[in-house]
Image (cartoon, rainbow, N blue to C red; front, side, top):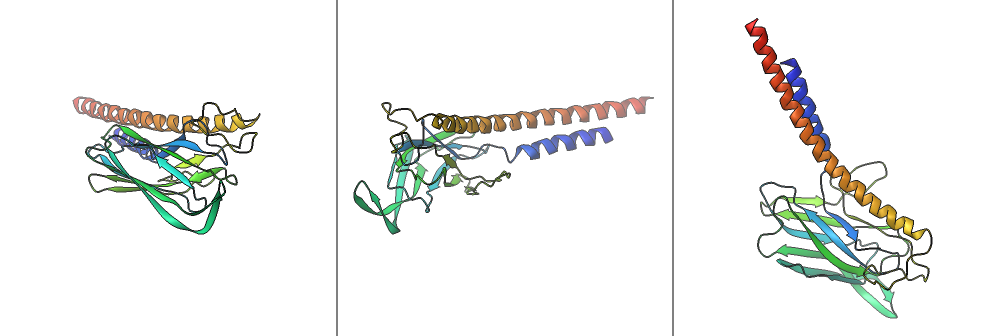
Length: 244
């Protein structure tokens, strides 16, 4: 029985360790998100619940780097609302003075939402991306039809893994012309030597994140199976002792 208890404890430990690495709301560009340019990005929303559907997503935009152009792509079955706020300091864009910027975009399911075991992507065209930052941090609020609200708002810190990480968009260096490359412009020239490494790094980081999620889930299942095997072994050992 002592062996069985240890096995179950080990399995539980694996499951707990797998928790922080579980899927969360993330953002990735369709191609490249270059400093000073425009890009189309996808906010990916996985459903982490077995008995509830995601029916609302709110993405809050960074106030320290206001974006003058934000256009969500229509998603079938979802209503979208763009909220703007006045800027404390007006911005200049293509010779025009910009006095307000998008503060958040909210998607609300018109019917079923994101069902358990599935995910949904919400594309948004945005810019101009800042030329003095290497990333943008968005804060996401995910609401389920069970009334549960999950806040993905913790900003990343070096050497630490937040429990509820906010979506982070990595920005690559501007292209040689100094204007940045739009991700959906197929005629755009590739970035100068060295800039492709940044895009490859961003892609590798996303792949590593997905791999980490998959590995954590596999380890959780393996841990549970080991725990069950330990329980069975303990029961059989107890019966043998009783028989002898």
